[in-house]
Picture 1: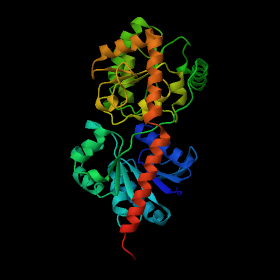
Picture 2 (picture 1 turned 90 degrees about the horizontal axis):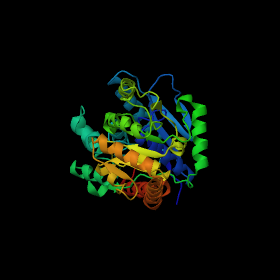
Picture 3 (picture 1 turned 180 degrees about the vertical axis):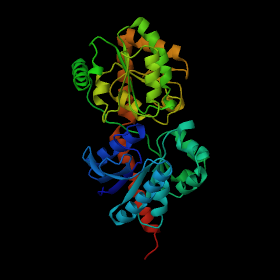
Picture 4 (picture 1 turned 135 degrees about the horizontal axis):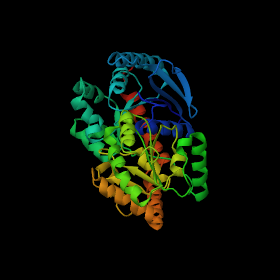
Length: 397
């Protein structure tokens, strides 16, 4: 297998952290480990951010993205177009996160080049890329531009089906599930050390060793159903007064959630510590993972929690059911039913044998079907195939 020169384009990236951003960061790291040359291209969301950084050893280029709505998007698109043109002869493939503005630029700028453009769809249902095309300004035009790409990746069957229904060529879409790193078995000692390290880094994360800890990691967005988790927490506290919920991440709903926690008097029991570059210590410190989303494609946060041997409590939506089989490797509650959610949390806190069973089964499912190495190899095979196809089809100069 030859070494590929790849550009991974994602308009949002560290320190803005969500599922899509973590997918690209993890993929870039594994591609590099496998011997490929990777650059990440993103937006400079704040003028004081450096234009070039290294993230996990991967070079990151930030393009101007002024805060003025509309103009910021135009400037970013212009900058991305210029960058792609300047790097055209140095790339073997361009992989773009989301069927949005970055995808439009990459597809149009490299249409007549030898460099294939592969677009990765994100999200499903009302928060997915296909729904974005129905509601956004120029959404249908964006969709038509995206459909001209050389290939597509759908990380879940629901996203695949939505793309086909939206008119994307079935033959061009490759179903490649998300993948995550799978580490060694978690121990009680690691849990203690992780809690101590987090408390030392941020005192608001201090908690007793005996305190049950439930965590959510991801973007703080209304589609994640986090207000439901906050409403459920007083019922959990009736049985476990020292239980804690950490809502880890950043996003547009942060102020609303903070105000809700304050209004309910739960400030010391529900913590919003912001985003982490890596959630490894958060998951190691936790006893349970919670994902109450309204919509998901295939949640990278859920996969990471499963790989960390955590029992997972998730909402009953198609994206979660891809990964969680009720009573086998996790528990599922009906969307918007915070009473059942609370009951599931209490049940797992009370039954350590059940918690261990669910956690180990979850990890085994990730090992068998959703490893980062396997996902990356599938991506590389797609990139190589499309590179060769485009070279053969490109007219001679």
